[in-house]
Structure formats: structure tokens, C-alpha cells
Length: 419
Image (cartoon, rainbow, N blue to C red; front, top):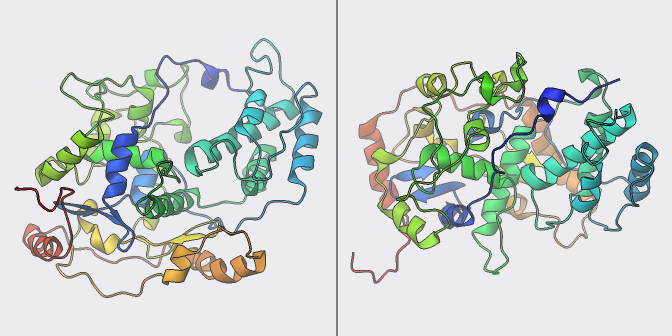
């Protein structure tokens, strides 16, 4: 019987990570769906699979996730599974989109009496399934349905929760799926005008990406104090997957803001981004020196295990979302040479990029025909890569900036501003 890890249950006194909506909005304002990059005065930048690996530790190897389909009568099946394990739980709320988070929250181990009560194997399984669904819906694949998680994800969560060995779980590329969902969220958000518009996908990835690279809206954490085993819950020797990622320091350390630091202030952030000098940008935040100074014990092997995927030309897939990375525009983030002139390469067809489930009148056969070619393409993602090996060259990058600054709007100021 599987047991709940007492070490991982130890409560920590760190405040829950909160999103800075103003900071995220400033990033959305600079996103261009035509290029899949942020446009800054110092050039283009974008989160990539390298950032997903280092910040979140999600796997890139494995099958692309898509397209998904909810099982028929999922409400009945889910209620049967969960009430068999916890007969005292209330009946599932009736929402056609998926289970409500408030319903899933009753299956937390503390709600079931742990650690005073020994949980059964079935209770542990259902608690794990509820947590995975919460993780999907609240962190990795957020949607405008803020009260529910998509029912199409139930099958994946149940497969993981019920597995008794690694062979029972299909290896999936969760990292590429998260980046696909985030790209689509940015493409949608930068075009919406509703006051209720929001950033969907994985806002956590965006905010951690910003913290690592820009001194804007970034809290102060004690990075000078090495992040060691004492920062992990419990005094035990961790497995390779239990070691921290580069994003852990922002989530597990106490975050403070100096008197001169601004947070949650959109006008100030806009001015700061427009006036930031490129020397203040951290282009390559994952250097060996940065890792060793922050984590002398080491970081999770998941951060670099799938590094052969970082430069892929493969399209990113999540459900019916298909997105592409513009790595040829952000080579400086890898310390590599960037062509002054952007190469003319085939792009994702516009109708595929804009396709979505809105309207609900497209069959599963349609989605299989539309998305399967890109799902199949991902099987060669590790070998279909950008082969650039030349190191970053400032002179050539300067030529790129000359072209870039004459073909894009790089400041978010009124056109009549005297400056």
C-alpha cells in the first residue's frame, strides 16, 4: 500500500505564491502573435522549452498531448470512484465543463483526517487524482472557466493516480503542452478588449520567467543564502526528482519587496520596461555559476534531462492547440549567433494557429485530422532541431537591432509624446 510521505506533508511558513497581474499585463502588451515573441527596446525575447525545464522541471520527452476527449458520463464515473473511497463526501456538482475545484478540495488528505487517521489505498489514490486535476486546472492549463477543471484531463489524472509502477503511465510531454497553452493564452490575451480578459495557460511560467530576466516587479529573496536541504520539507536525502528547480527559490523562499521596489503598478512597470537598458537584462540566467551559488546541493536532474529538445523545430501541441517557437529570433537567450536578417521559413498555417474549441461544433474526427500531423511530428522533435553552433556575436546582433528597430514599435508610449 502506498503511504503519504510525512516529510512532504510538513507545513512551511512561506506565503502562497501570488500572481502580479500588472506585471503579466505588461508582458501581454508586448507579445506579438505574428512572431511569438515579446517586443522590447533591446530586441525580441520569449519563454522557451529551456525555461520550462529549468523553472518547472516538467518533462519534454514523451507523446504530445492532443487532441483530448472527455469520457462519456464522466460525472457518474467520477462520483462512483470517489464516493467508493470516501462515502462521506458530497455528490459531485453538476457542471458540464468539468469537476468544480470546490468539490475536489474535500479530498485533501487533511480533510480526510491525515495524519491522525491512517488513509486507505483508495483514499490516497483519489486524493492524488484530485490534486493532479487541481494542478492541471489551477497552474499548468488555466482557463477562463475559473471554477472548474476541463473534464478532458480526467483520464490523464486517473491514469497517474492509479498507476502502481512507471510502466503503467504513458510518458507525455507535459512541458511542451504547458508552453503551447501559454503561447495560445498570450496570443488570445493581447487581442482581447474585455475588462474580464485574462492570461490563460501557465501564468506561473511567465512570472518566473520575468523574475529570472528582469529587475522589474521582482521580489527580493535571500539568494545569497544557499538553497540547501534545509529548504526541502523534512530532513531526508532527496531523490533526483525531489531536488529544487531554478524556479523553487521564488516559490519556497520568503519574498520581500524593498521600499524602492514597486509591485502591482501597471503604469510604473510600463515606464520601467520602456526605459530598461539591455545591460540590465539577464539573457542567460541558467549559468553554472548561477546554479551553484543558488543551489550548492544541486538542482533536479529534470532541469537538464531533456535538453536535446530545447532547440527543436517541432510544433507545440496541447489538446487542439498548435503553436510554434521562434527560436531563430531569440538565439541570444541561448548564447548563440543570431542572423541579422530573419530567415524566411515556413510557418504554421494561420487557420491552424487560430483554430479553437469555441463554438463546440467540430467533431473529434475533425480534430484528429487537423492536429494529428503535429502530434506525429513531435516524435522527431529531439532530432529536428536548429543546428546553430556559433557563439553570440555583438556586432551581428547590432545589425539585427538596426533592422528590428525600424520595423516594429518598441515603446508603449503615446505617439505624440515629446520624447
